[in-house]
Image 1 (cartoon, one colour):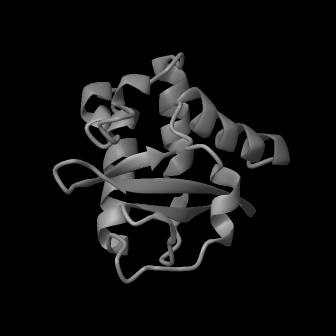
Image 2 (cartoon, helix red, strand yellow):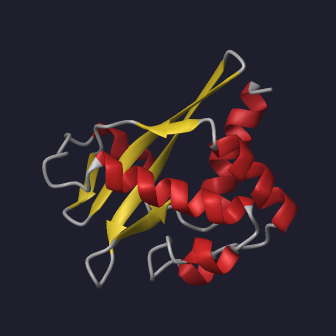
Length: 140
């Protein structure tokens, strides 16, 4: 059941304990939309889905490849496998908003909307261009 406490827990667990939040992330939602240079929604959704699909089957090595190279050492943090898999199950009910916001020219923030059993929760996920040009998770 998506309660208010669960919404807050999801947001903070994903951002803080995975250590993937950038400085000042709360102000990002006020940026102007720049989806013309952002990764396509299809590409962004593929990264999102790939990450959580790997987590749900317990393959943290595969999940880590979806995380930006500068942040890979922070994943999975102090989370136990069961906790991560529970989060992954919850994330199956989430979709990315097609209009990202620019954090900088190489990073875009997508709103995440989760709906399950009549409850709705929102969060944010960031994709940053890695050194090889691949878009990877930077804010989760």
